[in-house]
Image (cartoon, rainbow over all chains, first blue to last red; front, side, top):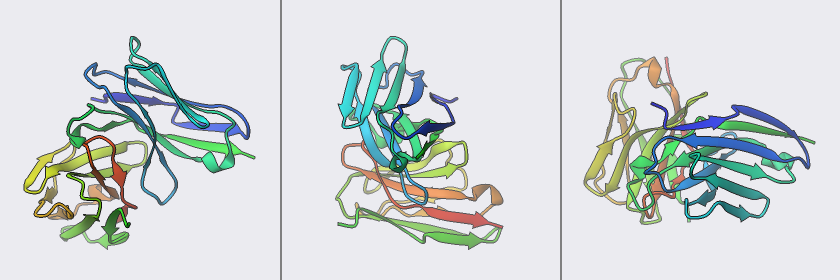
Length: 114
Length: 111
């Protein structure tokens, strides 16, 4: 049972464009939604996270949009740069709960063309 | 500050062999976990620990054992390696249980 569904699997964007990655979750008890960024040969690193009490969170060029009623959240990368080329994972968890409940999507490989 | 350190970085095993993947963190985090990453499958939780002496199973625990005798270390043991365990393994630690800090990974091939 896949509790977090992520799309698309891969994404090609021109430099300066907007990259959009979408995730949907099933368990309404989830209340913490992080995005991780992974470069080849490296471990995933936390990029940005949101809790459902807000509909949007922005950190620099990265924005999470959250739609609680639709059980969906998305990552927007503005002014995408070649250095943003990486695999992005969304995840869902219970805020304050056991780390064992961090459920990941299957990932999106982003390529930003110069 | 080293963060989460995994050893070895690469390993080739023969079917049936056993080995231990090491994970150490120097951030005094209570929570630690092991994930495996396979193409198109994302990160799947193998085992996790909420503190020294406490471990529990994740989504894909079969074929793996863990123990947590200290806060710093969380080794993952493969009892009898199988080709299906060929994967990249990541160890992670967390101060609060949800913001995970990952190691660099161990790429394991079972032939």
